[in-house]
Image: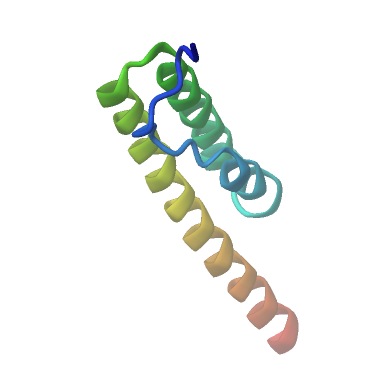
Length: 83
């Protein structure tokens, strides 16, 4: 019998969190990694509601970090071209 595995487990977004940490925004990426790991742990414990909350937080932090990183890259490119 398999324990700790449910069909409705919340996604952890761990790969996306690591990408954001390395390529976009370090502080938000680290916070997203923490939330992603918490979502994985809560899924393993069978606490679906808390895992969904942690997953949603990780997703939101990843979206904000990605947008921030893209804006920062655009600013750097514009400054490099015009200065």
